[in-house]
Length: 363
Ligand code: GLA
Image (tube, rainbow, N blue to C red; front, side, top):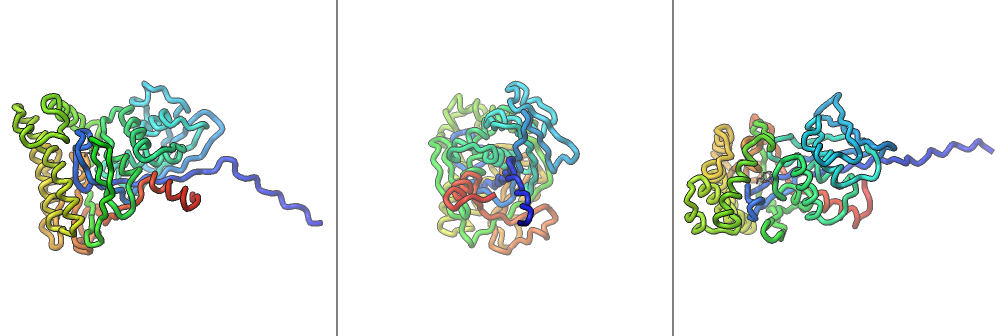
């Protein structure tokens, strides 16, 4: 009888690999923390985490973006320490560990196809990937609330926009979000519309940008006229402070543009949709003051091209990416002289998990 081959032990500590998509906000910026409207979509550029259980009480984090470095975190991070922990790039992982409470020590390795600090939501992509890999269950909203809380724990006062679409986006659709009611609706992106993202190369960090100042200004305006996403033009006029009036005017007009844009998309009116994007950029630049001369120039140079219907900065602003709505093939991303990508709407992490649940497991 031949000697029995030793049976390889089943790996007791399998690596779980999960990807969180980035997002492009088609329209509706700085509306989420004002109970307004937005229309983002999850995109095929993302952040991937490979998480392997370990038999100690540490979480060891490495990242392809920081070769040779590693962060060693306790399995139960100190609540007060996550915001100041070093290296700073591991803070969000620490906050997710704190909130998601994985049961064992872990090795976490992070890689990305999404440029960081570029307005495409690399932070939310990382958070939703981690939440999924750590086994956080629940619907996209509860996952998004947890991920937003993680950002707040490290001192970044973001809204729900990014994690909600990075978790709950659906392939082929943008997600209309009403932040006042929490209602979401899929809005199909027509085949005749192409979305191209162009990276200005200007990096920003929401911890140090004027983002928190804008949040505070909106909250000062809200103290006078109520949530800006629910306000109307007459409320804006009633604001006496000219700076607060401009901030409020942006939010009120931006919310109206979200539905103008969504209706135009639905009827295939790319000219109308593009005009809403152009108006959004002007409002973000003039009233909300989150553009820069370089972004304005980039937007201007893209708008003039044949087959381009509109362009605007996307996300928080202060740098990062511009999006362009164009006829298919009108723009060659490789020829733009910047990092540029054609993007399609993909599933968010929770949508992908739900599909895995329905159609069987995958890695
Ligand atoms: C960042 C924040 C979001 C949102 C946008 C601006 O991406 O993370 O919550 O406020 O800026 O729309």
